[in-house]
Length: 112
Length: 114
Image (cartoon, rainbow over all chains, first blue to last red; front, top):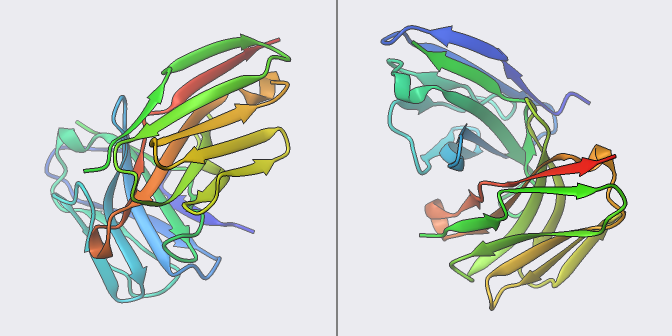
């Protein structure tokens, strides 16, 4: 039972670089979300998806892009990295909007 | 806009003590409330989920209660153990349509001393 798998676990980028954070789940969950966690601010929703081909913006979507071509995968793209995007990123999935969310172990991202 | 507050931010107790963690939210129109545990450098583990129609949920030594009208939830941990040391987060599901989302508190960092 892999659950929610995030790669990479750590990444250091330079300002202006782009990259993709990977998220995969093997529980056949329709709902998937991306959050960022910053000290003193809790977790904030970046983007979410209610099923393959359907995505929507959360609270802090600027500078990020997502797509959902399969049920299993929900990658998060940083278009042009900025120091303000230094954070821990979590991917989560659930059966539906009112079911418990399952989280990956996170990607720790530093932008220099 | 929904806001979730957890007080205290940190708590230290001796092993064996019963303790209560608090969570408050500003908009009582919620679908559910979820308590999570987060260990250092790890993701969030779901502990309990209370639907808006429920008053409490129990799992082992954990009991979570929900009072929607007052905008409060408590997580009760019985007979605390050093292994319970972690950060505990509460989150509420609220909003409608595309705005429906989970809003998190900043967490309570619990240390149980042996």
